[in-house]
Length: 254
Image (cartoon, rainbow, N blue to C red; front, side, top):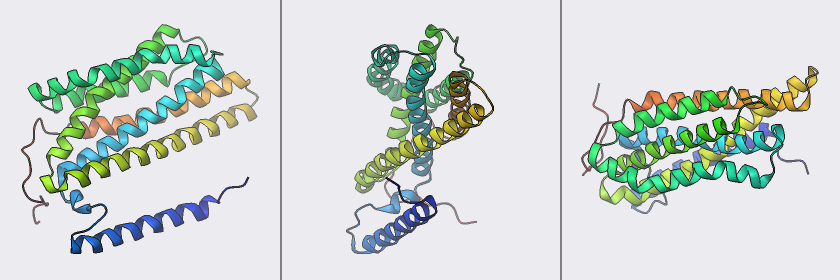
């Protein structure tokens, strides 16, 4: 079935978001907002929100692309694809408590900066995949990506919420969770659009189906690497530690 045309869906979505913001600002005056947007008055929280959103866009884009590449370009079954990607997922999950201890001991920046470098490196190398790339290389790059994401997510989430006063914790956590979903959806749509466009161009130029698929993957992975580069730039602005906020922080006048 035909969906809503983007020329209608996008402006309509923006209007709904604008209405939601205005509505929440009005409710904030009565002390009953669904989502208190005063959290965005805190510069460090805004920074963490941006880093988290960009990192999720890169992560979800790569998580969608890699299985497609392994199955469509390399001919792996669903089971073999899952087994190849499983170690990276396990490494990311098991590393969570350890990253938390490292954060307590060393602070955020010493984890986020190397993690951002690892994300950029892994996605940059994935943008060079071909039909002959060894599977052990793909496994190593995926594990590097997952471990690097673990080094970024836990510290940035903790330090972002730590910049908020206690009464805004629940709103800050909700906004981070909402942003993750939006970034995941937006990142997936963006990379799939780039992939499909490049694949179609190569197919129209006479390339084989497999070559067109690989070419589309290269461009899409390249896009996720560019997004991750933005994460790396912002990572250098993250402080090592932050004292808990007791009142809203605003930008200095002038």
